[in-house]
Length: 185
Image (cartoon, rainbow, N blue to C red; front, side, top):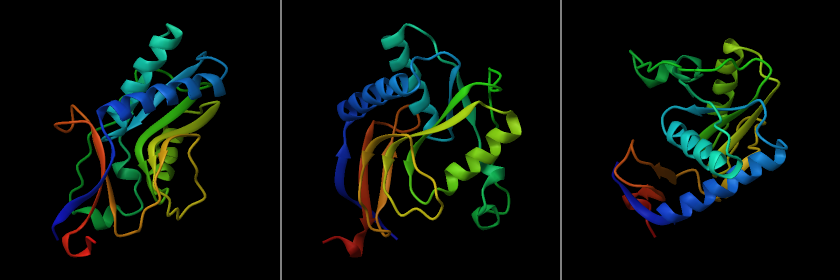
């Protein structure tokens, strides 16, 4: 199945502006950054979390700790992924107990990744509050989960794929919609 680009949603500048706006929203909703921590969901939630922390630091002058969350073993589709799933590990340089923790991911789709992340977080400790920040919300929820902070709402069909590309994971920063070659209209 060949995928081809259908639409460009965000370029590098749009992503940067969106992250800055989201940083302001996180600060405003939480009345500052006291006891705030970020957790990037592997893979592309990690660079987003670091960029969000950098934007918050530029605004508030305070460094917000960032953790890395690997949800591989918490997925409900683990048996369908592969015989030997690759686990990269979770890294938290901070205690999350009593903190406001913002989970950061690239795309919110069915809600299953966010649910898996919640289970992983609860195994690490008991935050005072957990919020969700996503760069793109594409709809099609299967679970009652919504993001607190959304970069861009993008109505999509189930056949479309929202592809977020971020350095250093990818060669550039962009968000595009891809479709199967035979579906392009």
